[in-house]
Length: 427
Ligand code: SAH
Ligand code: SF4
Figure 1 (cartoon, protein in one colour):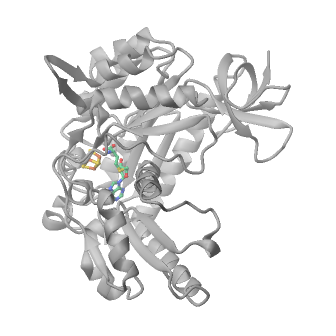
Figure 2 (cartoon, rainbow, N blue to C red):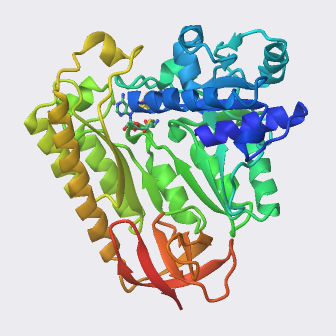
């Protein structure tokens, strides 16, 4: 999501007469796009700011600005703390950047952290940064109103709004014309996407269908789905089109009913299991991945075991796993105690990671012998004679280069697997 935002910023500034450089020593302006989801992310940004400060010695006029969620969360307070900041802009203020930069260049310290109810940057064609020319992201909505009790997003990114469907279709068309072969549609809860045009109501299923129909060579992924809103209609749409990828990221957060309730996730363990059964039934070859938080407020050993048992029951192909990090301006920080000792959080997180390692290996090992269509994304980091790409299930697959090019689809038979990678041979 942040990468997608950086591409919007790059577009706004390119139109304003600036150019993007990949050499930091040459930059006259450094804008840091930030995340506030966990404290750790913010700590890393503070360290990075110290490094940027050191660059000022060689480049006295250098402007340093902070963008995104941390800018929104801390507002001017951070400017007071980090005296090196010239500019602060929240996630809905990017159109205002050329003006803010003009003022900053006159020596003023400037900020805009106003959140909008309708900004979607729909008309802005992102400048693709650090791109492999094959895969790209498209933001289809902004903000979130689910108010999961641990989460800072509703306060840093504002109310939920969907982007004009026609602009999403156009952006996808432009991408395929420029050689891209995969787009990931992004939103905090894509299942609640809705756009009204004339008398047509575009739901997320409709949008997926519109995008899938553009060109069968364009693969479509999406993230993230909230379990409470994942409908059978959506699953049936995914089943109908070969280019809608058979991979669903369905964050569970916890396997315990009482923790889910405290998290304000609005589903129970049984509701979640019912959704998994629906996926297995409608999309038998679909991979399921998740997000899990270890050590949320009041989590007991039984609650933790419920998470482990649910993980095992689902058999996730992959997971992002975090230890709970209390964030200011969230329901949990206001109403619950962050009362699980750090060493207990660490131990539970480790148990979750160890289990997921086994589940990923099991899921990948089951693919040995199968043939998948792999979209070639790049040269393997380990060997320049190997390419890597992904199958529809979003599993990274490495195979020897037999004369294919980036952006090609290759049929690959899987001959071996680790917990992170499938290893194959073109057939
Ligand atoms: N909108 C998406 C995910 C947003 S953030 C969704 O609802 O699924 C990505 C992940 O970060 C979350 O799924 C959650 O697992 C994790 N996360 C969010 N806030 C957190 C916090 N305060 N502490 C630890 N992990 C957190
Ligand atoms: Fe945060 Fe919940 Fe919204 Fe995801 S759905 S962004 S976890 S509030």
